[in-house]
Amino acid sequence: MVFAFLLLALKLVLPLVAPQSTPLGVLGGPLLGIAIVIWWAFFSRVPRLERWGALGLVVLAMLITSRVLHTSMATGMMGYLFPIYALPVVALALVGWAVTAQPLGVRPRRVALVAAIVLACGVFALLRTEGFSGYIDQEFAWRWTRTPEERLLAQASDEPVAPAKTVAAPSHADAPPAAVVTPEKSIAPPGPVVVAAPPAVSPKDTTLADWPGFRGRARDGVVHGLSIATNWTATPPVEMWRRPIGPGWSSFAVHGDLIYTQEQRGDDEIVSAYQLQTGKPAWRHHDAARFWESNGGPGPRATPTFDRGRVYALGATGILNALDAGTGATVWSHNVAADTGAKIPDWGFSGSPLLVDGMVVVATSGVLAAYDAITGQRRWIGPQGDDGYTSPQLMMIDGVSQIVHLSGTGLTSVTPANGTPLWQYAWKGYPIVQPSQTADGGILLAVNESSGIRNLAVTRTAGGWSVQDRWTSNGLKPWFNDFVVHKGHAFGFDGTILACIDLTDGSRKWKGGRYGAGQLVLLADQDLLLVISEEGELALVRATPDQFTELGRAHGITGKTWNHPVIAGDVLLVRNGEEMAAFRLAKPR
Image (cartoon, rainbow, N blue to C red; front, top):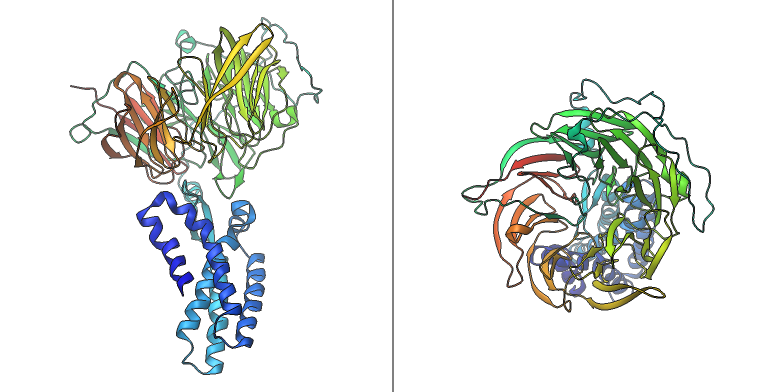
């Protein structure tokens, strides 16, 4: 009975009073379930036939149920979802039967025992999971109900008037042929490439984008030159528009009056453009591809990148497209998984394309690949890494421009010109969070949920490059949500709670506010963090080291929100796998 009460408290009470401890309930439940089974088998007063017969029936019921589970239930949590969640339920069913059924006769008691076990196991055959939350808890739904994506597809078509097409013109003559450089690696011939004439680019298309791609211009989540009203009670964000969108964890790129993102609609992976002011669709590019896994659900993960009249987008299965930013017409396309020989990682290709020196650089399971941005010709393939979900990052270190990428083997730096390795730092994990650079040239990185955050000193010496650990801190453990650097401090999520650390030694300055697996951007001019919680709620928090101070909250969007927010001018853009919305941010009075 003690184990049963502990199990109920762990599963029902703990998540209410300490949401950040929910993983303890998820993982601790099976352990208490096993303890109850041991009690049942060896210490309960239940007659021997019923004790051992019940355990045999439990094994049989779980085996049969496992054969008819929804695919999401069968594959969730690397295939362990069903036993992890079913074992505590079955254990409680046994305890409940032992407490309530003893006054019954032998036959009714045994019928009740069979019914309790069958129901405890069988209910899982009626469920599907829509993935886990930042608390590592599953979001269950009845398997016959429609998903948000199915509801979207059932609505009236909102396709743009002129769908995107492939440009059929020949490649332009003034583009010099690019040599394929493959340092220290033999690779297969590239996949088919459709090369087209460059679109007619107006002068405004060659200007810098308002928000060119993943986490902004420097991929650091920092907004400069903007001040907003901070009293959201008096001047909250004003909704401009709201509309449904297909699933995916892509954020936005913004240029002029168009915003670009990726989404899934049925069997098509889509790069889409919408009007900034109204949210109406401008164009959609379709690829016959669908990525799905039970934890994160369907859809592309990476964010498109805008550069000089084109949009570059990497899909979750490895399709890299260069599209006309105005029309969505295909300029060229590659299957980078085929080019690099990389396998699709568990959570799909997630790195957003990086534009540097006339090349588009993408990450595929720890391997960087570079293509000529104009022609699509492959330029180089980088050194072998391991599965990871970060994007390539351009950094200037000791006066040397280099592309840094964090994969499952650690941090690797290569030269942009040909992908030759400059230096490597080994730290195994499954990194999701983008590495960041400090004001003094240090590099901050994290590789999993328990690694903490590490500060590296990278310097150029006469003999090459030196990489040294400065410190490792558990005061901030970002593994799912990106962090920002501001005035000698880092602000980000320690699990699901916001925290601030001092970059001199990694010591924690404060911790507060529960936002789940949300995301944030920094408004540097005002020392402000604009946070979107995992539930889609907006919040303003002071980006100062003295204490945690939340200035205001406002409703954003509904549903699980892992996508990065974007600020272009005074417009805030947010989305998740169900809907997207735009808000006007008021200026200070």
